[in-house]
Amino acid sequence: MSLNGKTAVVTGSNSGIGLGVARSLAGAGANIVLNSFTDRDEDHALAKQLAEEFGVGVRYIQADMSKGDQCRALIEKAGQVDILVNNAGIQHVAPIDEFPVDKWDAIIAINMSSAFHTTAAALPGMRKSGWGRIINVASAHGLRASPYKSAYVTAKHGVVGMTKTVALETAKDPITCNAICPGYVLTPLVEAQIPDTAKEYKMSEDEVVEKVILAKQPSKQFVTVEQIGDMAIFLCSPAADQLTGQPIAMDGGWTAA
Ligand code: NAD
Image (cartoon, rainbow, N blue to C red; front, side):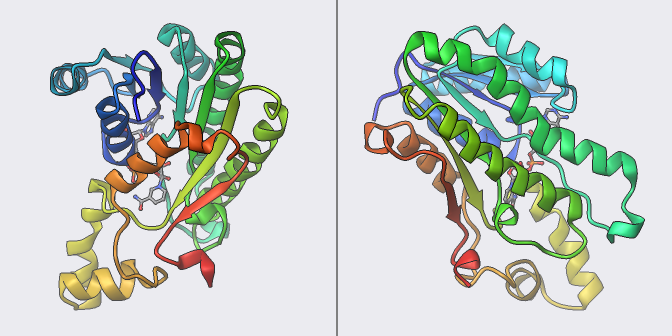
């Protein structure tokens, strides 16, 4: 599968799943726009490193996905956007009656509304060029709830709803819109929680992974960023031309139950 000549914008891609998907798409030949809200030397160095490793064009564009105007500016600065991966996301865990309002607002803005702004800004260009792929990184929490994650679950269910709506609005165009819904992925964010949780529960780190973190994931294995990247490539392939509006669960069986 060659994505030579296509440009992919991946929001929130200086770490974790976003970086993994960006690497996969670069490996398939796409030019990449990396993004996060920071503007550090290491962000630009990462772009340079990917460009050298994969022999594609890679730019880093700073934009804060909690701000609608910056989401739209990212798409404008990117220029041609053939593949849009809405991935930026944060988490906060608290009971709803104690949930900090600023965290609620940030999660709804970054995890959900950013995809509205980037999609709205990218669609006219995709229609003009005659091809487009919108891939929303939702979550198993776009299909199932867990306690204490009200903002995250709300935002991710919202993204799944937006995915279906955009698919219907683009059904007659050569554009598809799908949501990848991963279960737990061993990103630095999740990895960092293991030692503390082990101390808290007085368990070994292996037990924490199996009994706490992967409690809901029947396979008892993490999803990998490479698997998510391969799914993104598949969604860009001709085999997926008629695959649109779908939440695609990659969760070791979590949402089968
Ligand atoms: P991560 O923290 O490694 O990556 C999040 C990315 O979003 C980072 O690049 C970060 O810089 C960026 N980001 C955060 N706030 C931003 C902002 N205001 N503007 C721009 N970028 C911002 O976490 P991850 O696990 O790779 O998560 C990526 C996506 O995958 C999220 O949407 C998350 O909800 C989703 N997801 C993760 C898991 C998991 O188990 N790790 C499971 C399902 C879904």
